[in-house]
Image 1 (tube, one colour):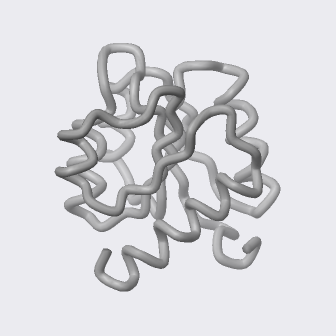
Image 2: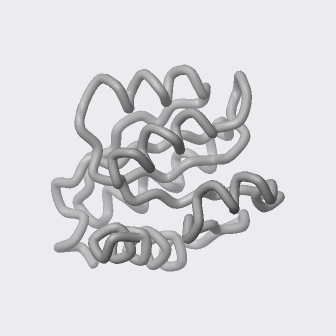
Length: 127
């Protein structure tokens, strides 16, 4: 799994600093380049618009609102994404982004990387 993510730019959008640090540590351990972490939805949108991304790990509810605008940008660009949330996704979000990978918090590093790899494989296969 390290080869898959080595050197890849992965956006981390998480408003809990401890969770963000855990995600960042997990990504750094496999050689990824972490973009962020950011805690606000507006900052996540800005990161999406201001540079290429290879993947993203997103909390659904960030400071300033849900991460839906980020999902729209990344989905349009076929960027693999994983949502890490404590409450699941609203039905309308699941319907709008079919096959979106979700991890319920707390999530361990192995599960997180597995879901991210699944998201990558799904995007490579056309979702």
